[in-house]
Amino acid sequence: MKTHTALLLTAMLLLSSVRASAREPVEDEGHPIPAPPVPDPVAFVVPAGLYYVTDTYVADVVATSEATTIYSTTTAHESTGSYARVIDTVDTGASSPFDGMAFNGRGALTNGQALAGTYYENFVLTASGYVPVSVVFFQDDSETRHLRGKPTSTAAPNASATAAPVVTTTQRRDESAAPPATEQQVPIAPARPTMRAGISLAPDGPMLASAEVLRGRLVQFWPRVFADDVAVPIRSWRLLSAQPDRISAGRGSTQPFAAQWIRMPAPGVNWSLRFEIFSEVAPMERLEAEISVTLRSPALVN
Amino acid sequence: MRQDEAGTAALTTIVMLPLLLVVLVGVLEMGALRAVAHRAGAAADLATIVAVGDQDQLELALSGKLRLAADAADIARDYFARNLSATVPALGASADAIAASADIASFPTAPSLDPRTGARYDRPTIRLIASIPIRTPGFAALLMPAVTTVTVRSVSSPR
Image (cartoon, rainbow over all chains, first blue to last red; front, top):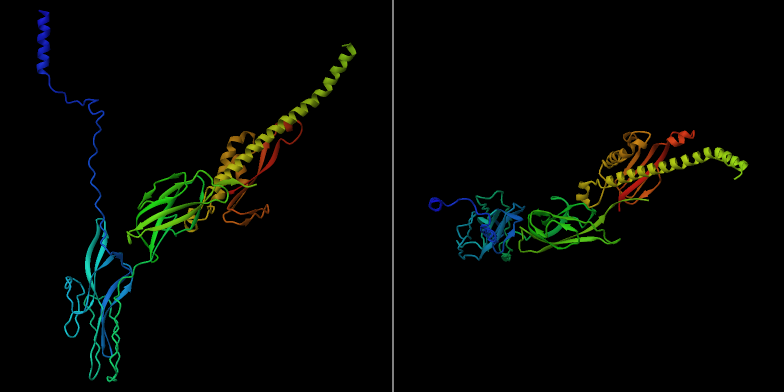
C-alpha cells in the first residue's frame, strides 16, 4: 500500500511540474555570450582633390584697360574653416555641367560667349564627413576689341559680392597703337597651405623642439599641426619611436600622448619622441614631428 | 689580595667612578645629539626635494624648461615642518617655529647666485638653512647648556 501511495505521489508530482524559469548557473559556461555586433565605422570619405581654403571669394571684377577687358575674381586671404576642390575648368564659350549652379553665376563676353574660368565646390567638415555647400565660379578671361572714341570702363560686381570690386580704367586715345597683348592670367585659386607639425605640452601651447621632464612625472604631449601658421584639427597620430617606461597609447586623435619615465638615461643622453601625424586639412599628407626629452630628477646638491 | 691592596682598589673606584659617569653621559648625549641632528637634516633634504617637484607648469608648456613654481619656498617650509614633527620630543622648539625661522630661498631660474652662501646654481634650486634647537639633558646634568643648537643645510635641484 505504501509503495503504491509513494508511486502515486511521485507520478502526481511529475505530471504537475512546470518548467522552472530560473537561470541555469552553468548553462552558458563555455559558450560566451556573443557581443552585439558593432557596426563598422562609416568610412570618412574625403573628396578627391580637397584642400583647405585660405583665400575666399569676394567678387567678380570686370576691368577695362585700353582696348582690353579683363574678367577676373578678387579673393580675400582668410580661412573660414571650409574646404574646396576644383570640379571643372572651362574655356571661353565652352559649356559646363555646372553652369547655373554657381551662386555667383558665370558671366559672358560682349559677344555673348560664356567666360572662361574654374568651378570650385565648397565643403564644410561635419561629424558625418565633408558636406558640399556651394559652387563658386572664378572667372578668368579677357577680350580685346578695337575702340573708336572714348574708351569705356565697366564694372560688373556680382550681386552676391561682399566687397566692391577693384576696377582699373585707363583713358587713352592713342587708338592707332597696336592692341595690347592679352595676358592670360592664372586662375585665382586657394593656395595649398604650408603644413607644419610639432609637439607641444599644452593643447594650445607652442610647438617645442625639446622639453625637460621630471622623472616619474606623467607628462602629456599634444601633437599639433599648423596650416599657414593656423592651428588645424588633428585627424590621427601615431607614435613612431620613444623610450618612456609607460605610455597612454601608441596612437590617437584628439587625446594627447601621455608618457612617464622611470629609468634615467646615461649622462648626456636625451630621450626623444617621434610621431606620425595626419591632419583634417590634408588627411592624405603624412607629417612627422619630434621632440627631444631631457629627463631630470630632483636631487640634493652638494 | 692583601687588605691594603683592596683598600687601594676601592679608593680608586670611588675616585674614578664620577669621571667615568661623566664620560659615559657625555658620549651618550653626543650620540643622541648627532642622531637628532641627522634626522633634522633628513627632514630638510626631503623638504627641498619635494619642493623641487613643484614646477611651474605654464612655463614648462611655453618653453619646455623646468622652472620652480612661485610657491616652491612655501612648499619646502611646509614639508620641513611636517618632517620635523616626528622629532619634536627631542627638539627645543616646535616644528612650526623651527620651520618658520628657517632661511629658505628659491632660485627659480638658472644660473643664479646664492647671496648668503655664494654658491652658484646651474639649475632651478631650493636652498634651506635652519637652526635646530635640540634638548640635551645629559649635558645639562654636566652643567652644560640644556639645549644645543645645530645648523642644517640642504640644497636641491632637478638634475
